[in-house]
Length: 296
Image (cartoon, rainbow, N blue to C red; front, side):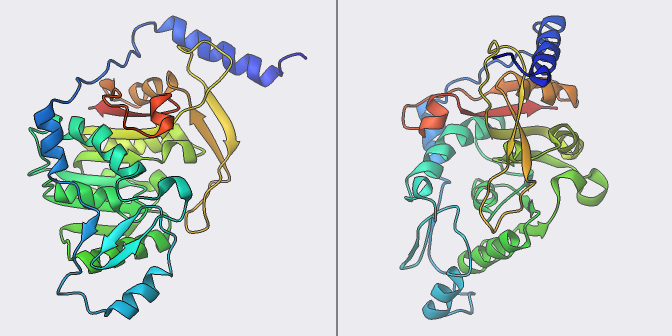
């Protein structure tokens, strides 16, 4: 069967980019975290919280409210355990715990061991899980935005339960992020979002504008039938749960495409966070998903 003309054209253009700018889009790996760095990062992580004295809800009301939301991340609030709704996300020390120890130690290493004094923005924050981790790791201020107002409502509910202040959750579109409306942030998170969007270059341009020091991009990657060093974007349906906003289609980048796009929008250096442990979800172990640090 002949290859479709669209794929031929796209593969040809990707190959041309790779050959023309050979070496320009390299993304070296970050150093393996030391045992001390892992211990330090582990000291900040929390997904088990006592219910804050300031919370006005009783246990029955809390349980009822929990049922109003889709839970992408597992938590424990006092004596109430909240499992993730999807099977492969379940467990307090499951997928997201493993992900934390994959990319938070390199993030903290770039900042001297903590996020103390840093301003952090999370674009596409869902229920705020990573925004909370940033605040617990010492960030001075944290802003989390998500296009889904239901996700923002859920993040504020968790904030009410835990009493963690210093985080501003607000509705926001990744395509409308700007320095004028939000300001400039030392560190920006773009986690689990790049493979859900239909205009990735535009979104990354917005990300670059609001990033002061570096951005962290965690994404599922496209596989293709072309050489691994050729940048490819794969068009696919965007399939998410009802609480999330869907673009209906998404352009999923290959491993080689991510640094090309990040450097195209202006980032000076791009690093891959290497797999430093086998205690990782399978998609990370097989490089079907990776995390990148883009330095401004």
